[in-house]
Image (spheres, helix red, strand yellow):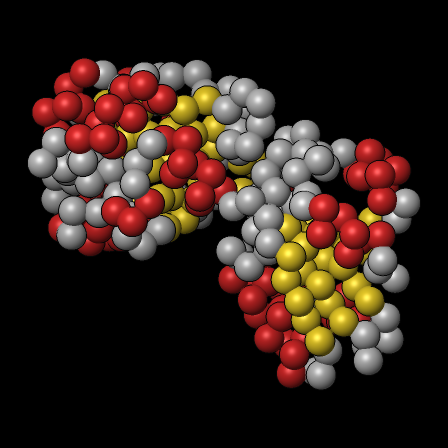
Length: 268
């Protein structure tokens, strides 16, 4: 029986993988990768293959979710398989399901962790990680039907005076990557429907673009201002802070994210 090793690629390019991860790839019989859960703007398959000396097979969402990763698992029955994943391998629940299936089939699994967008974006913002509640994905609306879950999660977190980390939808097969502008417009529309007063044009938000790159963009301010801000290319992430900030959080937002001075009034 072989094994399946989940390897985190990190956030931006082929140099973000750990030395341990690189060694595992070089010692693998088969190497697979997926890029539908996140975008790595600087990652080039050709460069990675030259560095590792391995041929990389790219899998689609359909391969992993609809076909239950069998193309991967069949090879893992008889050899060592490396499965390359953007960020940290088990942040995406689809990969947890794949690991469970592998273990139930008697295939040994291991995990080589990589940098996660959650820790990276939160760290870049200067907000304190222990003040975050449940995270949520803001999906593209289907047939103009607005998803209610993001609004409900933000509301529940704000009631508890907690920040919310928002993953923004990615549809790699379609070349669609949700922007901070898209996400904020969706949240404002949800506010119009629900009218709980938690997402206002003057509410504080934090946008992070291309975390892990040499030129990430981090910007905090009123939603009305961030909607018109230029964050550059994807991937984008969004943070909706609680109604109150720790004094160090407020200072960090001003220094790191060019937040307006009025955030000091949110200290409490």
